[in-house]
Length: 198
Image 1 (tube, rainbow, N blue to C red):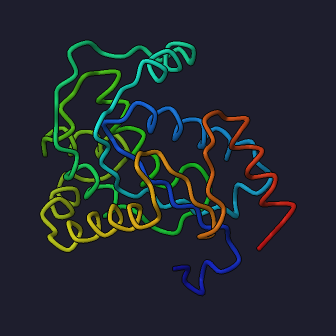
Image 2 (image 1 turned 45 degrees about the horizontal axis):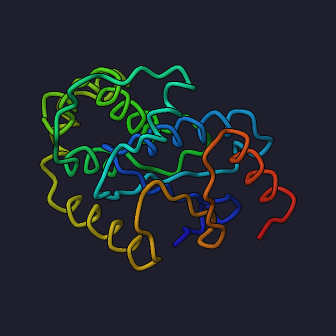
Protein backbone atom coordinates (compact mmCIF):
# COMPACT_ATOMS: atom_id res chain seq x y z
CA UNK A 1 0.00 0.00 0.00
CA UNK A 2 1.36 3.41 -0.95
CA UNK A 3 1.82 6.12 1.64
CA UNK A 4 0.50 9.64 1.00
CA UNK A 5 4.08 10.92 0.79
CA UNK A 6 4.76 8.78 -2.26
CA UNK A 7 1.32 9.00 -3.88
CA UNK A 8 2.72 10.94 -6.85
CA UNK A 9 5.27 8.23 -7.54
CA UNK A 10 5.11 4.90 -9.30
CA UNK A 11 5.74 2.17 -6.75
CA UNK A 12 7.48 -0.94 -8.02
CA UNK A 13 7.64 -4.10 -5.95
CA UNK A 14 10.47 -6.39 -7.06
CA UNK A 15 10.31 -9.92 -5.67
CA UNK A 16 13.80 -11.38 -5.80
CA UNK A 17 15.44 -14.61 -4.75
CA UNK A 18 19.03 -13.78 -3.88
CA UNK A 19 20.14 -17.26 -4.91
CA UNK A 20 18.35 -16.93 -8.28
CA UNK A 21 20.53 -15.97 -11.23
CA UNK A 22 17.47 -14.68 -13.08
CA UNK A 23 16.76 -12.32 -10.18
CA UNK A 24 20.31 -10.96 -10.39
CA UNK A 25 20.15 -10.48 -14.15
CA UNK A 26 16.75 -8.81 -14.11
CA UNK A 27 17.51 -6.49 -11.20
CA UNK A 28 20.65 -5.41 -13.04
CA UNK A 29 18.62 -4.81 -16.22
CA UNK A 30 15.90 -2.96 -14.31
CA UNK A 31 18.37 -0.60 -12.65
CA UNK A 32 20.01 0.14 -16.01
CA UNK A 33 16.58 0.85 -17.51
CA UNK A 34 15.72 3.18 -14.64
CA UNK A 35 18.89 5.17 -15.32
CA UNK A 36 17.78 5.64 -18.93
CA UNK A 37 14.11 6.33 -18.22
CA UNK A 38 12.59 9.81 -18.26
CA UNK A 39 10.61 8.91 -15.13
CA UNK A 40 13.52 7.55 -13.07
CA UNK A 41 12.92 10.11 -10.31
CA UNK A 42 9.28 9.03 -10.03
CA UNK A 43 9.83 5.29 -9.53
CA UNK A 44 10.24 3.98 -5.99
CA UNK A 45 11.30 0.33 -5.92
CA UNK A 46 10.91 -1.96 -2.93
CA UNK A 47 12.88 -5.23 -3.08
CA UNK A 48 10.79 -8.09 -1.66
CA UNK A 49 11.72 -11.60 -0.59
CA UNK A 50 11.02 -14.72 -2.62
CA UNK A 51 12.40 -18.23 -2.27
CA UNK A 52 12.61 -20.27 -5.48
CA UNK A 53 12.79 -24.05 -5.53
CA UNK A 54 15.54 -24.01 -8.16
CA UNK A 55 18.04 -21.21 -8.61
CA UNK A 56 19.94 -21.41 -11.87
CA UNK A 57 18.51 -22.53 -15.18
CA UNK A 58 20.64 -23.20 -18.24
CA UNK A 59 18.94 -20.27 -19.97
CA UNK A 60 19.87 -17.93 -17.11
CA UNK A 61 23.50 -19.05 -17.26
CA UNK A 62 23.57 -18.34 -21.01
CA UNK A 63 22.02 -14.90 -20.41
CA UNK A 64 24.69 -14.18 -17.80
CA UNK A 65 27.47 -15.11 -20.21
CA UNK A 66 25.92 -12.90 -22.90
CA UNK A 67 25.84 -10.03 -20.39
CA UNK A 68 29.52 -10.55 -19.56
CA UNK A 69 28.86 -11.91 -16.06
CA UNK A 70 31.21 -14.68 -14.99
CA UNK A 71 29.54 -17.15 -12.63
CA UNK A 72 31.69 -18.55 -9.82
CA UNK A 73 32.18 -22.30 -9.67
CA UNK A 74 30.97 -24.46 -6.77
CA UNK A 75 28.47 -21.93 -5.42
CA UNK A 76 27.57 -22.69 -1.81
CA UNK A 77 24.03 -23.75 -0.98
CA UNK A 78 22.60 -21.27 1.47
CA UNK A 79 19.72 -19.79 3.40
CA UNK A 80 18.92 -16.30 2.10
CA UNK A 81 16.59 -15.22 4.92
CA UNK A 82 19.27 -13.06 6.60
CA UNK A 83 20.13 -11.35 3.32
CA UNK A 84 16.46 -10.53 2.74
CA UNK A 85 16.20 -9.24 6.30
CA UNK A 86 19.12 -6.87 5.66
CA UNK A 87 17.59 -5.46 2.48
CA UNK A 88 14.17 -5.10 4.14
CA UNK A 89 15.82 -3.16 6.95
CA UNK A 90 17.48 -0.77 4.48
CA UNK A 91 14.39 -0.25 2.31
CA UNK A 92 12.95 3.25 2.09
CA UNK A 93 11.12 5.52 -0.36
CA UNK A 94 14.17 6.77 -2.27
CA UNK A 95 13.25 6.94 -5.98
CA UNK A 96 15.45 5.89 -8.87
CA UNK A 97 17.92 3.06 -9.45
CA UNK A 98 20.33 3.85 -6.62
CA UNK A 99 18.38 3.46 -3.40
CA UNK A 100 20.46 1.83 -0.70
CA UNK A 101 18.23 -1.25 -0.67
CA UNK A 102 18.58 -1.79 -4.43
CA UNK A 103 22.35 -1.31 -4.36
CA UNK A 104 22.79 -3.72 -1.47
CA UNK A 105 20.41 -6.26 -3.04
CA UNK A 106 22.42 -6.28 -6.25
CA UNK A 107 25.67 -6.33 -4.26
CA UNK A 108 24.49 -9.41 -2.36
CA UNK A 109 23.72 -11.28 -5.57
CA UNK A 110 26.97 -10.16 -7.20
CA UNK A 111 28.87 -11.44 -4.17
CA UNK A 112 27.16 -14.80 -4.44
CA UNK A 113 27.16 -15.38 -8.18
CA UNK A 114 30.43 -13.73 -9.21
CA UNK A 115 32.55 -14.16 -6.08
CA UNK A 116 31.04 -17.35 -4.70
CA UNK A 117 30.60 -15.90 -1.21
CA UNK A 118 28.24 -17.39 1.36
CA UNK A 119 25.59 -14.68 1.64
CA UNK A 120 23.87 -16.58 4.42
CA UNK A 121 26.60 -15.54 6.88
CA UNK A 122 26.41 -12.43 9.06
CA UNK A 123 30.07 -11.60 8.40
CA UNK A 124 29.57 -11.63 4.63
CA UNK A 125 26.48 -9.42 4.81
CA UNK A 126 28.24 -6.95 7.12
CA UNK A 127 31.11 -6.68 4.64
CA UNK A 128 28.76 -6.20 1.67
CA UNK A 129 26.77 -3.52 3.50
CA UNK A 130 29.98 -1.71 4.46
CA UNK A 131 30.83 -1.46 0.76
CA UNK A 132 27.74 0.75 0.45
CA UNK A 133 28.42 2.86 3.52
CA UNK A 134 26.35 0.94 6.07
CA UNK A 135 28.15 0.54 9.38
CA UNK A 136 28.73 -2.89 10.88
CA UNK A 137 26.73 -1.80 13.92
CA UNK A 138 23.68 -0.85 11.85
CA UNK A 139 23.86 -4.08 9.88
CA UNK A 140 24.07 -6.14 13.06
CA UNK A 141 21.03 -4.33 14.48
CA UNK A 142 19.05 -5.05 11.31
CA UNK A 143 20.03 -8.71 11.21
CA UNK A 144 19.03 -9.12 14.87
CA UNK A 145 15.63 -7.45 14.44
CA UNK A 146 12.89 -10.13 14.71
CA UNK A 147 10.25 -7.80 13.23
CA UNK A 148 12.10 -7.93 9.91
CA UNK A 149 11.79 -11.71 9.85
CA UNK A 150 8.01 -11.29 9.82
CA UNK A 151 8.27 -8.62 7.13
CA UNK A 152 10.30 -10.94 4.90
CA UNK A 153 7.83 -13.81 5.34
CA UNK A 154 4.85 -11.51 4.70
CA UNK A 155 6.39 -10.34 1.43
CA UNK A 156 6.91 -13.92 0.29
CA UNK A 157 3.37 -14.90 1.31
CA UNK A 158 1.93 -11.94 -0.60
CA UNK A 159 3.73 -13.03 -3.76
CA UNK A 160 2.29 -16.52 -3.39
CA UNK A 161 -1.21 -15.04 -2.96
CA UNK A 162 -0.66 -13.11 -6.19
CA UNK A 163 -0.04 -16.44 -7.90
CA UNK A 164 3.72 -16.18 -8.21
CA UNK A 165 5.59 -19.46 -8.52
CA UNK A 166 9.08 -18.14 -9.25
CA UNK A 167 11.11 -14.96 -8.89
CA UNK A 168 11.88 -12.43 -10.19
CA UNK A 169 8.52 -10.68 -10.33
CA UNK A 170 8.00 -6.95 -10.87
CA UNK A 171 4.70 -5.33 -9.92
CA UNK A 172 4.07 -1.66 -10.71
CA UNK A 173 1.53 0.36 -8.69
CA UNK A 174 -0.11 -2.86 -7.52
CA UNK A 175 -1.44 -3.42 -11.04
CA UNK A 176 1.09 -3.72 -13.85
CA UNK A 177 2.84 -7.08 -13.66
CA UNK A 178 5.93 -7.19 -15.84
CA UNK A 179 7.48 -10.39 -17.14
CA UNK A 180 10.41 -8.36 -18.44
CA UNK A 181 13.82 -9.91 -18.91
CA UNK A 182 16.02 -7.28 -20.59
CA UNK A 183 16.83 -3.61 -20.17
CA UNK A 184 14.82 -2.87 -23.32
CA UNK A 185 11.80 -4.72 -21.91
CA UNK A 186 11.93 -2.69 -18.73
CA UNK A 187 12.31 0.55 -20.67
CA UNK A 188 9.17 -0.36 -22.62
CA UNK A 189 7.31 -0.97 -19.34
CA UNK A 190 8.48 2.36 -17.92
CA UNK A 191 7.49 4.15 -21.12
CA UNK A 192 4.02 2.61 -20.92
CA UNK A 193 3.69 3.78 -17.33
CA UNK A 194 4.83 7.27 -18.33
CA UNK A 195 2.31 7.48 -21.16
CA UNK A 196 -0.55 5.93 -19.19
CA UNK A 197 -0.32 7.16 -15.60
CA UNK A 198 -2.69 5.50 -13.12
